[in-house]
Image (cartoon, rainbow, N blue to C red):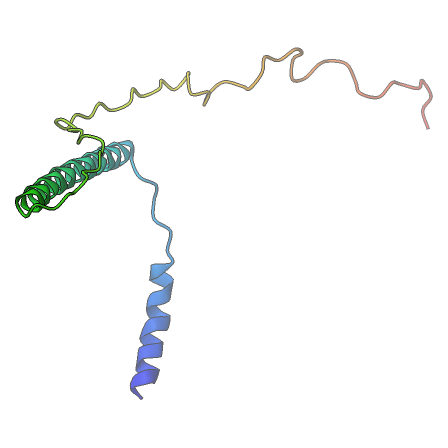
Length: 126
């Protein structure tokens, strides 16, 4: 009985889950692009902080190994690069005419309609 109720509930909610959402507005797209840029920047900051902590751990290990009279060869690694403060400059919006929305793809060589008939007259009537 519970399985039947669960299947009916699933069948009733499937239609709403498959409904098409309206397209995003330009403001929502800009906000999503800024959020993506901020996420990428925070990933770079997290990588920088991880690199610094790994350097500190390696320095502590080398100091302890040298104090214990062990011979350890330190491995050279690239230095940590600071991503700097977050800055986002939104892309310049293209004007409507520059996007090609209102212009035909090519310049027309002839008018769309002409006064000439497509079939030649024969001169005889049936």
